[in-house]
Amino acid sequence: MASIWDNIKFRYLQGNIATKLIFINVGIFLLIKLFVVFCHLFQFDGSRFILLLQLPASWDQILLRPWTLLTYMFVHLGFFHLLFNMIWLYVFGLYFLRWFSSRQLLMVYLLGGLTGGLFYVIAYNLFPLYIASVEHTVLMGASASVLALTLSVAFYRPNESLLFMFIGRVKLKWLAVAMVVIDLLSLAGDNAGGSLAHLGGALFGLLFGFFSRENGSVSIFGSKIGGPLGFRAKTGRRTKYHRPRFEKANRGRPESDQEYRDRKKNEEDYRDAILDKIKQSGYESLSKKEKQFLFKSGQ
Image 1 (tube, one colour):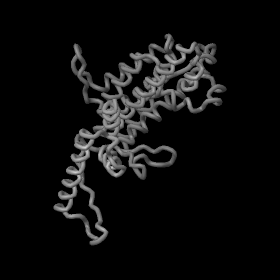
Image 2 (cartoon, rainbow, N blue to C red):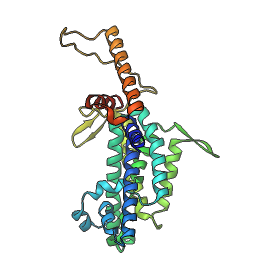
Image 3 (cartoon, rainbow, N blue to C red):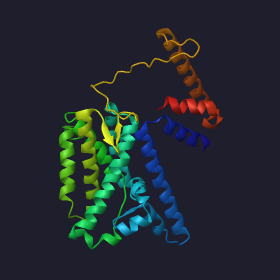
């Protein structure tokens, strides 16, 4: 059992930001399911506690639990709801990271989900079709965040394609159009709140992709995402890694090529030794320094 837990922690630490988000979503799903089982065993109604994580459509209820604007995008109650969202997150997370950074992906996930949530709340309080059900409607799931990632990539690289079984390759721009059209046609359906959130997330993703194409950076709250925060689109089809020059404290000169190669070789040897140690004795056998090194090398 310990080795399984060590392997999970290792996979989490070594995974990219999309993988980490998947771990978080799956972990919350399992905790909720365990809580539901516990409630059934003791004949206890736990639904009101789960509601504390879901986003209500009523402004009055949001004022009482504002954290739901964040938590709702990590909550899934159905297995297939979780499964399909995580598949899309994994696929478009990989696409996204080809041209953008990990911090950008996290930013688009969170702000795309926030935009989707606000879009849903505003629509439910604005359109007569939804006002009657505003007091007992809640929203959950990562779909708005995933749509934000999908649209940002599709707008930034519209002619990239995705291979589908039985269909073949589909360009991202047509995939994005199809997803938006489906949500527009679903606004009068049973999951209108979900479709509204999808459209809000898609709108954020479209704007992110647009400004990334035009400027290479996005400005939010007066700070350029691409400036001090490091959020800038990678340019070109392939991103070349430019070795940073480090000033040596004892010499006051840039690191030479040979010194750089020696340092990288030492780091790789150290990392391999840590991985061997995990394989033999488990993750908990690592020292604090080794854990920090492994975490940083996985970023």
